[in-house]
Image (tube, rainbow, N blue to C red):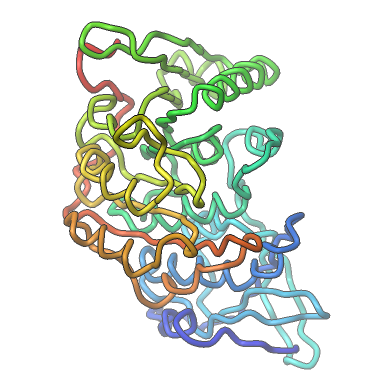
Length: 388
């Protein structure tokens, strides 16, 4: 087996197994990406993602975490006792997980025995893959961003069961929201661009009808101070009729509004995670003073963060992806810390930076709100009576 072990923070994050059973070797095949630039970084990003899972949720049970080649194909490998149902469910959620194997035999002639992973999605993944448009965030990366943020939260250990509440306060056409729905979570967004909201409304309604899922999907006025200031998409859906009758439903809500108004749009302490892909140096996100749109993600996050944090449950987490060419990591970490969050800024958290294009070097920062989640998330998203 050819070896190119991951060095530095990712390798250091994987501690020795704490289980009493004998560790065995495992290999996870990396899902190929149609995006050539992302595909080149995918094995290392997956290693960092698994390092975060191990540190935040699994308790450091994975040893010798590395990227290795078998027959010229990259795999993520580690040593650990045989996985239980819970661990398999978490592994299935990894953004670029393709197939899991147990490795036997020597390094010169390894044998790979397939291990079945449970389904990672509760809905068809074409909810995410069908929309194509300029500026769409890579679906695999979106799943990674969602994963590491949820795992960092107090609700992380139960994230594989779905039912958490995710807010994207700059939701664009809804890639993060759709990804959350795929995983069985409730999704809510805020988007200032009316054309993006219109595009998401049209697609979601068409997709729900085509899939013949039991649902409601309504666009209603968004009111503030007694007057309409925008519109809001409200969706409820269930996997089947029995689930619908039992009230077992997923919710999607998107508000056409400025993200600086977040605290007026949703209830306080109602989300387990705030997950967003910040502007990459183009107009996006919020109206600055004078009516123009923000260009600096640092300025935008600094102004919007107090409102976002009002909506976050104790123990919740904020995950932000951004272009490091327009805002240094240290400055963004400082903004999050100054707001009272606890940035996670060592080990695998420092191994998520990767190239997107000639002018974009993307990184991820995650920070946790102190406290413990009070319990399972509920479906109620309403903030205040003036916003029907």
